[in-house]
View (cartoon, rainbow, N blue to C red):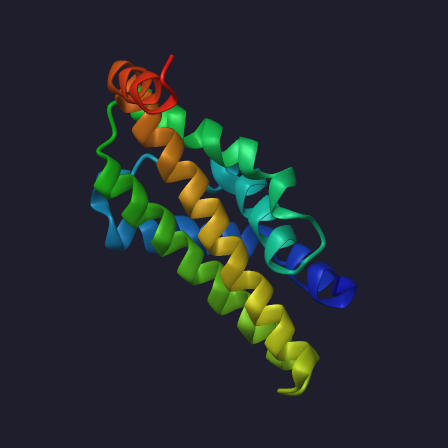
Length: 150
């Protein structure tokens, strides 16, 4: 865990959330419904995992819920994933900038970035998987029953 890094990013959480929303709105116009206040806790959770302050398992349920909610709202899975990846790029960039500022490019910096990339993969994967499952619950149930033999 990198407490100084986590605190540095937490102190700028409103600015970072606004940047995430702005970037998603620009790059994925289908997601213009996002507002900084709506995603603030998701950004906070993701950054805590990126910095190692939380384990990914502690926040995956929130991202799965996001995926389910977006699927039930009729959001296209491709747009949803693009929005997630766009937001994740902002968070990785902000994490890297903060880590570079706080730590010289040494093993600490490399460890922070490895944690951030691993977290991004887990978070996006959980949200997209939940979206797919929610969008096609009947197909998923049938496939599961075929694969599990039940």
